Image (tube, one colour):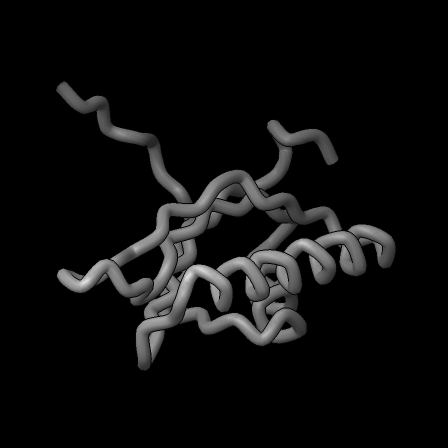
Length: 99
């Protein structure tokens, strides 16, 4: 499938306890390895970007991620294999323009 044919998904990954930059880097590395594994198996999934969520102490409390995938099951499978939380998965709508 081309990027235009893939569906956009937004995933909120809220963490029960804040994590460090090193832990975030390790999670990102694991996520990338699982993405490649899934693609090698024929699953069409791509990571687009993520926003890191922080508390007032600048500790990482979660991420808000944008993926493109053939379906929601691919997004769920990626999270499960990578050991990542999925607090919420929604289909991406049309973006709103800022100022």
